Length: 316
Image 1 (tube, rainbow, N blue to C red):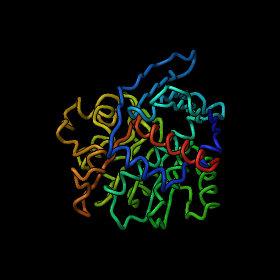
Image 2: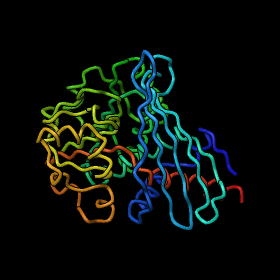
Image 3: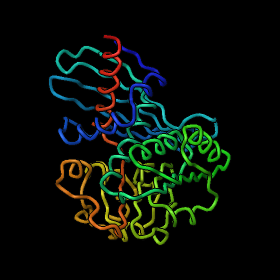
């Protein structure tokens, strides 16, 4: 049985290969039950969340990810998200690998956003704004820079020192990143805006979005979380990773559905339909597009299989 730590998991999940693996899994499909979602009380702090996400390819592989989200960890200088992925044989049930779930989650989440941007962002998009300074931030920068010549990358966060730190890490990778202090000005200028926060109130105002902008919402995974306002929903063509997940769990979708700003039929397509060509994605350079992701177990399974087969191949 393989045991892959954070560094080994990162090395096994190169961006181009991971994006393609997730695309292939969306195209081909797998068995993906509804994930378990449990709120957990943390005395004196915001509630934590426990997620259990199973998926399998019959006769080939099966896996489950256990993830915890503790918002209070920010005050402890700890990541908000911890997790472990267990990959087993779909033929015998034999345990094949234990994979660092935090790194797998961060990379597959960023890869899915970059995959959606292939279909929804303008081909000539060259300015990226990342909102949030957590673990996902640098991953999002790297994923969106894969196959896209970004000329300007801004990082905004409530903690300016953290934003500056993310910018320095991106610069060390040869990427043109800088911290930004004025969120509104940066959002008005950006071609792609990627939000990865745990915000309970909208950060991005729809009136800020320029024609042709692509808004990527990642952080909110509960009905009481929002990263964009109703105006953004009204102005945009809305896409999701999966309808089942987004329409049940994501406040950026559930709240507009509840207040009538968004109807179920207004969701143009989910990621599977974009990958399979059932929906063309962006059809006009002036359109504003919005992609809401809550994460899908098939993304984790695709990444886990890729990591396992990569390491086994190197050992052979």
